[in-house]
Image (cartoon, rainbow, N blue to C red; front, side, top):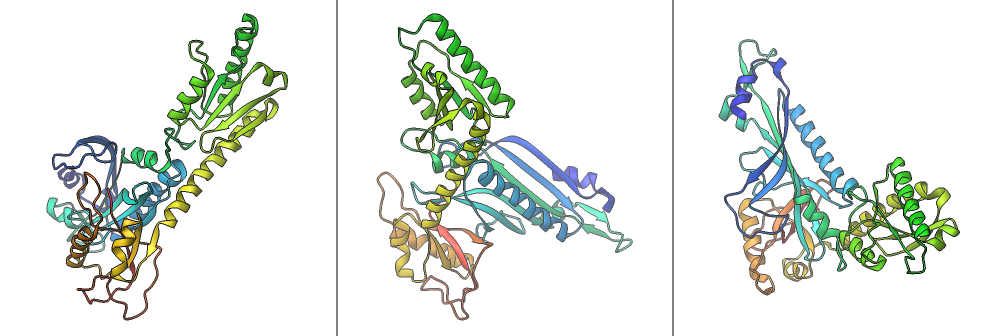
Length: 388
């Protein structure tokens, strides 16, 4: 792509260039496969841009990172921490890397959600992407570049953060089916005409919800019982199940069951669409708040090296005073691996830096790096943890 950039860019008028693409990637350097999270081949969205100035490039880096935060928090109800990668963990060849980092409570591991890189002029110098700069007549300037990407790993993060022992728990804004309508009370005494009237009402409900912008389906299969359908759609994580029976219709209501917590609510037919829209919004907020609170309970500030190993074994991610040197980071990873309590069939895993959070605290003057063999000053905290 960058050789094409070099042909396309001649003048400052040719900038900025903004390319976005979706493509499948084959990863040849591959180990420790994990479904959704780390596979030989995966689909991702990948952006490549070029600008005349560093200021324009840096502005876009943060704009894209904010879009990725919104995907996780506003669509998937997954809380993330925005920050900057250390020099050791940044994209190879880049100027710097920003990231959104998630947390998987079941394992106590961090996970990189998406990255937005400022490449600086490193690749424009390599591929001779230059333009005539009107501020310096007769001279050519190298473009400033960015790249950014989001992969199908997001699906795996969503599943691992929200799901329970019953199955998937899908956030409403991401669910292809937000409401499943299940007819009930289908005993042998129900007359055929009443059965068809019940099915017709279920279809009317789906149409009504569709007109209100709610993605709904009715399961009218007669060869499966209502309890079987309940289990089936709980496994699939559908946010709301509507139980519609003859007695409910006589009372001009239906029963809504929320997948997130199993709560049952009687909903009047007269306000069904509006009530379900509010319920879907409430479900999203419940899922996000619950995941954020659980994440926050496992983010620990640690100031003594002796406490690091036990805090990691307690499935926490750690905010550590850190000098940010590559050599010290490697020591921390190696030494925390030796501290780790072995897990069955799993190699010992050390803590790596996840990010330097944007929301950070200025450490008191004279604060030293967490590693006892370092002795260098630490000016802010870096988020460390075992990770995927």
